[in-house]
Length: 228
Ligand code: MN
Image (cartoon, rainbow, N blue to C red; front, side, top):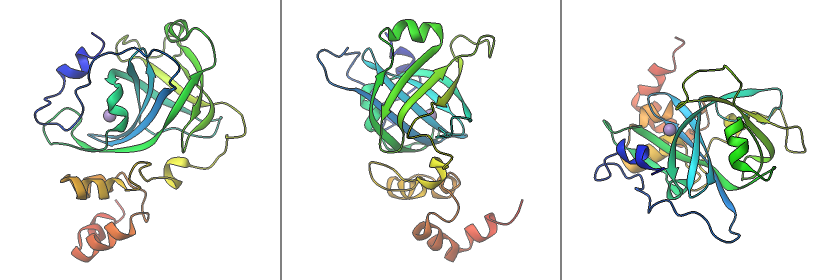
């Protein structure tokens, strides 16, 4: 049931995204999955995902997470994804839902900081601890009252709590590569048959030397990097 919306939106003969084996609620003590996918779709965003009750609860964060507790990042809740999605990196073909390049930007585990996760989600405030490669320590997702009225696409804020992992370092700019393959978006697009030029617009300027030097030689980047 939980994955109906996810499956309805996708054609699994066309997209390489996983269909998902089904909602298999976790038994025993395996850690809960946490993942962030950087997604160059119609707009660049970071899909923030927390495993809960056999699916990945998902929020699209347009600007990506910030390690600065003073910075609140908009997080639009999206449809639940299968747990298998936490390993997905690749290119969603043109014309398909979410068409564009997907990078596995961070992955690890998470723990809720309060016992009743369902009640926290219902109340619109969930505090949790992340053990990722890029994001760690204590965070909160909060859904301010009267802030966006769509109950399906509810608007939340993703905020870092003050702890030893809090910093003003711009993690999205300074750590732009995949934790799975160390590739930039443009390199994933190049390897998987995607739109390299479009994907490269999601990479920080100057980070993709190999990719951009090859493209600069063809003259395309040089024109596109002119001041707008
Ligand atoms: Mn997305």
